[in-house]
Length: 76
Image (tube, rainbow, N blue to C red; front, top):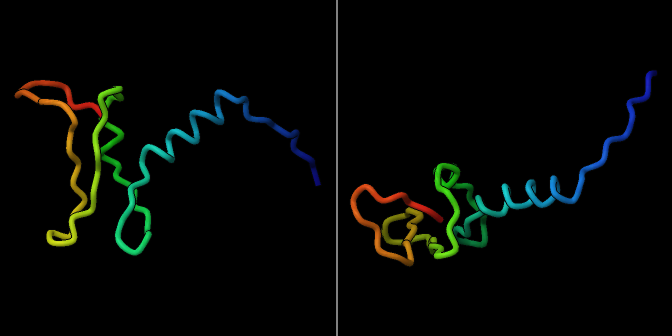
């Protein structure tokens, strides 16, 4: 059987991988985590946002912490 050489992640690659997963995790009821792929299309911003699970509507809702005008870029 042929052995494959070991490959190692650099610290920058590790940070990128962790940020990909962590930026997509969102808390759902009963401690479950859900992924929101739509977040992938948002650029990042230091102003931030908050995401909550609304039990009444059974939906995840995201609120920006800044005003958004028509035509503005949406960031997270």
